[in-house]
Length: 111
Image (tube, rainbow, N blue to C red; front, side):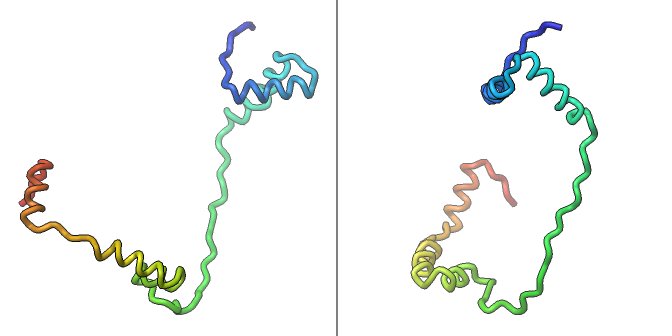
């Protein structure tokens, strides 16, 4: 059977490498690749064994994990805590008037 195929560049490179290494024609390489690959493509997918992560009781944490900035400051050093607190505490929440104006401008309908 004669047909025309448009191959992606990565497939063409692999076919050319195989062609040179095996000293075979393109037709032979493509037919062999299809013979090997088509049964895998038509077979039902194999069921994989579920991956399970082992858990370990590591005891009580030595630092407070509820405060992320504090935990990172402990791990990264106090310089991190200072730079992080600047970001956290420099935020100014909008006033109720600004909030209602934003809601009306965005088309938000609230009760």
